[in-house]
Amino acid sequence: MGTGFPVVRMRRLRRSEPLRRMVRETHLAIEDFIYPLFVTHGHGVKEEIGSLPDNFRWSLDMLVPEVQELARRQIPAVLLFGIPAHKDEMGSGAYDRHGIVQEAVRAIKQAVPEMVVVTDVCLCEYTDHGHCGIVDVKGGGDVLNDPTLELLASTALSHAEAGANMVAPSDMMDGRVAAIRRALDAEGYSHLPIMAYSAKYASAFYGPFREAAGSVPQFGDRKGYQMDPPNVREALREVELDIAEGADIVMVKPALAYLDVISKVKETFRRPVAAYNVSGEYSMVQAAARNGWIDGRRVALEILTGIKRAGADIIISYHAKDVAGWLLEG
Ligand code: PBG
Image 1 (cartoon, rainbow, N blue to C red):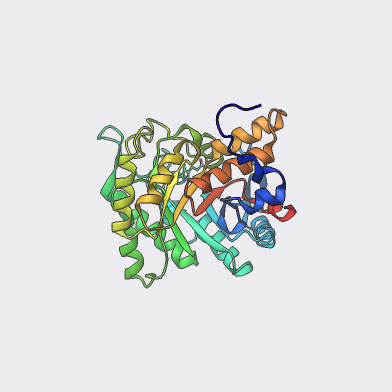
Image 2 (tube, rainbow, N blue to C red):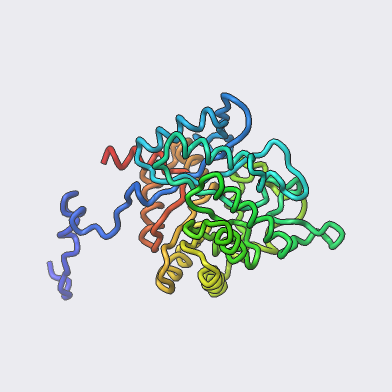
């Protein structure tokens, strides 16, 4: 029965899995992933984070066997976030040489030297007000840019001294990549790469993370330093500046609602692009899967493949541990 129009047989190459595999354009590999971990004080602590199912706050003694398991699953890298014992106005736990993240780096590098340890560089988990920098209380609660840079540089340096393999500033202060690069170079860490959270948006998708880290801002919000979600031209400018300041890897965060940004960054710059598949993106999938509304595994793999197809070379994801198992099963 003719349609009067020649039928192009696109379906020929979809008839079987081996054929589909042969023409598949995007493949997830475990090497693409960085797995985020939350570290806390104490002993024997493995506390599930309610808003982030199957993710935990780990004390160091429990963290090490977990990282050994991640290494067995061939996950190449972890990204560390710390939950300090005390928070204060200046976020002093962030740059304490024996702070929780610094000690976690030492413990991991000693037990699992092949694991790439990346550290998040920011003050928000360490400040009592929950902002990513020093707050000008008298000046109406503004986050002060330049005084914060010094503290971020000290934080990065303390991570480097502990043995971190890469630092990842997530604060969105202007000039922080340059400040960190300068501090690292001055102390003999010119070999240490910086993965900059370059296009980090003021997103509602960070909700579960803030519960995990106890970093909900006590007043105001982060819109004065994180990017406005509707903007993409501005993201390219942020990335351009971070590269000029010395970023080795640039990141777009979140991922799912920003695939166009990932794609444009990839097209525009010759740098590895990381995408952060953030807490809210993960928890939405978990919640729906637990209700039996979606197939969590298929949805997660579809999302992560989409992030890679958009142009991400590196994907930071809470799904990474599961993905490792799924990829091994084939
Ligand atoms: C710290 C930081 C945040 C995330 C990564 N680093 C929270 C924030 O900016 O509020 C979010 C990660 C996630 O939601 O998974 N500044």
